[in-house]
Image (cartoon, rainbow, N blue to C red; front, side, top):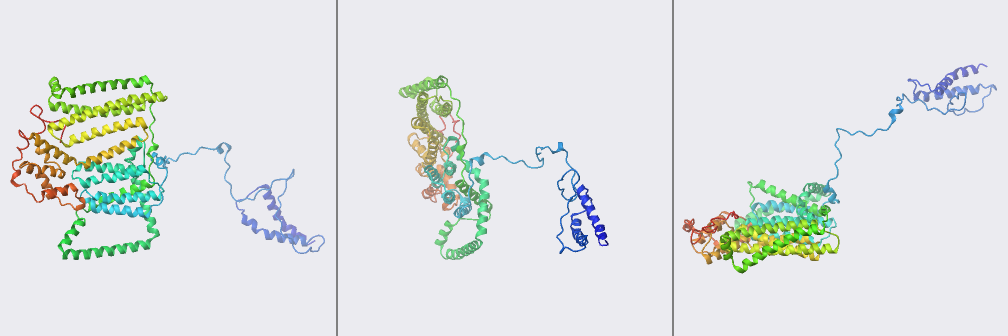
Length: 619
């Protein structure tokens, strides 16, 4: 029939295409879009073929086109093959498909291992409280304005806002105030009273360093020996991290309250302008008000601006580091020292028993000296009075220090088998501590003889104070052996702080001057050249000397007082009292012939004819 030829002739290409798909033959020029475009043509051809069926009649509407069926090769069914989507990559051989370990990147940075400090500080602080930021800012401003003029009450003015910054940060981190934390904090603030009371620089420096150590201990809360030592310096480890912490806090505050910051800035500027304008008017109107205002306001000049800027940055960074440490302290107690290997009883006790016997023999001889008198001993040993007193003190001081070292090492290797071992340790070390206390008393007696012969100096009073504190440490060790050593590290640190505070409060320079003046009243011997180098704390005692010794001793002090113009917050109470005593006094001609004054003979207290100078005392 004429209608069948075109249908069979037009359907031939479709059958060829399906055969190619079934055979898996792909052509580089064939694409998915070509197959999609051929669909309508195939459908029309199917409709024409259906209309030209052998019956010659149409069977109704055209059916939906069916997807092409893949040809089945003879021999069984086949799995349908996906259409060709483009060029395929070459197959990888089986031997190359084995898993290979990742190769390190020679250009990349290795991942750093967590530091020991991060392990000891497991908790990172949260956001900076607003009160902490204000307290830190106040500390920086007060440091820049007040600390550049000297040391006095201004240290307390700077320390109080810094302590408040740490308190606010600790409260935001939900830290509780513990008893020992309060002890260290109050002790640190109390030590800052020493520079406000004493003009001498050396006890003030010692008090400032001790106050820093106590403040750091208050923030960390350590209790072991190693923890107490590292905790006293641990504030320095928080400086770097606290800077980023504070910067993030300022950025968050600025982003969340830009409008309020503008109001505060404008209000502050207006207040400062009003104070300057009206303050200048009132100062020019009344001289008394101008004098009071000048004494209250810090003297800020352009020349010392870099120095004040440095002090301001130092105060700000220090307060920020204190607040960061209060919020996330380093647990220094996590660093532990392994105890030494326990020794046997005989191996451990024999050297210590021999040492105890040596101490006992020495103290027995000392008792003989006390009963027989020093004159007999000096006659038998061919030593002068000064040589006997001087040599004895320094040797006994070293003996005390070495004994403390021996006790520490003995506790490290002590036997720890049971109750009998504990009794042995307590008995042997307790006896050694008791004998060492008698050695301390003998050393202090030697120093008393030395001072009575040649006067008191800064070095002599310092080493005597150290020897006395070592005696206190021995008493604490004996108490720890009886009641337990849990509190011993804290007790030793507290005793050192109390010793530094007491040393500053007794006014060492004033005590030196009083002792030398009293010695002059008894023996008419005094070292005026040495007394001239003391601080203003010595003025009340030196003012009682007769002329011309008084003028010679006070000349240098009065000259330094006249040349200094420090504000009230940088002036110590000792300096203010010296100004009240001396007033406008001018030594004048009385100080012209001071070189030959000092004692009844040659004005020297450094020794007698047989012992002309003291090699142990550079002062």
